[in-house]
Image (cartoon, rainbow, N blue to C red; front, side, top):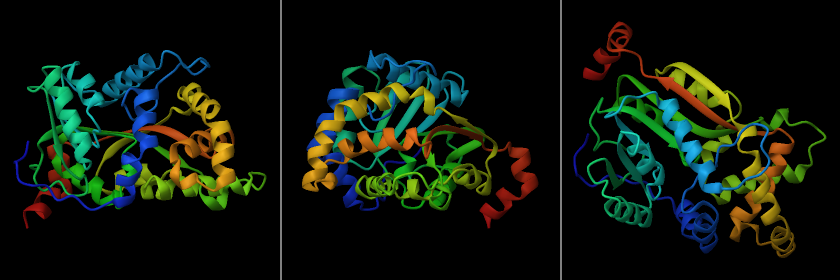
Length: 308
């Protein structure tokens, strides 16, 4: 799949500060068991517990979205401590996970070893902007789970994903999009829009700033992917959004009073996430696509251009 050369990782002090903050480390551990994604619920559900079961359902849905056979090789781009990678390995996939956080990589490698999954899961330092140490057409699938939003240059990332995917391979992005600023209804409080923009800055989500509705699917098509499908899962995460709002609301009032939102990004996000979902400004999406077959790529001249 690649070589062991030192990967090029772009410095991102804001993202490092976010994930290394005590609030993030304790919060993710306490509420999500170290996982860093939403859980999946029935569209009419309201009760969020048990959370662990909801998290595994979202990972099962991700596996279904990939539509890959047992033994397929997949790239987990932004793997955190490896929970998603290990779950998918349990379904027969060979997973290569990358993350820019040394602490995540170290803990992920420990978890993989403790579960005896060394033959199925590899976790390494890596930056999805720079996958030069991974060979062309070396993966059957690529996925992101709430990590593409952190990209400084999502178009470059998608180009790299396209390169490392084999012809016919799958890409799955479980990410967010939102109503463009000029299309925000006039009755939406300005504080809601301002709060979302602040969270994007403090949690280092520049791609989320770009992801107006329709932007990510258009980017995928622009960079050669086909059969792009967008599914709105916003109602399927609502119970967890409500839980975060209820837990965060009282602490947030004091944090807001003291002007400490930048120090408690997740608490701020717990309140604003409910508000933007309530106003239908924000969506949680499953975006899937395919790299064209070798014949289609040849017809398009992709391989000729690459060889020059």
